[in-house]
Amino acid sequence: MSAGGDRILIRGGRIVDPASGLDATGDLAIAGGRIAGVLRAPEGFTPDRVLEAAGLVVCPGLVDLAARLREPGLEHKGTVASETRAAAAGGITTLCCPPDTDPVIDTPAVVELVRRLARAAGHARVVCLGALTRGLDGERLSEMAALAEAGCVGVGNGRRPVPSTLVLRRAMEYAATFGLTVHIHPMDAWLRDGGCAHEGAVAARLGLPGIPEAAETAEVARCLALVEQTGVRAHFGRVSTARAVRMIARARYDGLPVTADVAVAHLHLTEADLAGFNAEAHLDPPLRTARDREGLREGLARGVLAAVCSDHEPHEPDAKLAPFPSTEVGASGLETLLPLVLRLVDEGVLTLPQAVERLTAGPAAVLGIEAGTLAEGARADVCVFDPAAEWRLDPERMVSAGRNTPFAGWTLKGRVRWTLLEGRVVWEAG
Image (tube, rainbow, N blue to C red; front, side):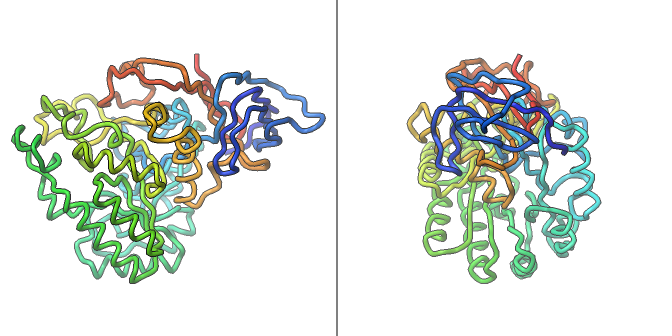
């Protein structure tokens, strides 16, 4: 993506940049697609455009660790162009695409295809996870050297299992050789056994096949043992149980190179939201108990969970109209990521700098990319939002091609006014 040519002054906003330890009111100057001055403009700086940010928060562009853009392979659900535009509307400037596209991201050609589509759209930067195994078959190791050379920021098997622990060990050893982080979806497919809801009182009352807590914790335990054996960096994506948070906290305390994130829906919803067979709340991993939700919130506040992601999965309307077990999993989450995290600030779970950190520097560090900071000289990826603006979520007004959300009708606080990608304004609220 080419750097923006305009010299922009964002004037009088509250600049929150946890990566630099900054939380102060002042100006942000941008030139040549880079940050030219923080708190005050450089001497002689003459802006082409001024964005008045008094009363607004100015922070790094958000970094989302899990967003399925549906292209290539499922363009009837969304495209890179439609979903990166929705990302810009949500203040997100960098998206991480999981490897389970069609074709699978297991060759440099597919990596370049996704990158080219993102460049052509120009709304947000897209980075890719390469496949851990060829075709995500869980049996044959992918060409990780080629994927690393092509620019993949890590490798994973998406939601597909790797049945053999020996194959998983060899894959981790191979990834470690090239300094690649292995991204893990912690779900034991055999303990899951076709379940579609948390194994508990709600699933029993609704007659839905359950997914036990152990389906997550058993896979976390297996992978932690292999991380200790191989020394590979590992990231657990979309953790959903309080017990898994405690296991990861212990592993980090013991010095293992592991990180984890949580999907924003799991910080607000529980198994109770499945009442009435609400297919919009059919997620993977499933919504768990209120105790699990509190454990996730505590893990986020303590920093055990390094990031909050949207776990964005847009669908066409028909995907949610079948009987609950047959509906497709996932929610469209790019546009609600920021306001739902800001809700945690209002509820006293996080401070505003902590919330911004879990959406910027935290996920950027997991991916090992240049993002998530407003330091002088850094790329000018910027989100400017009004933390006090209240709005009601109407799915019909969402920018994403997918209108599937369990938060329809919620009153949210926090609205993006401008999003800048490398110094270019890519979203401006009307």
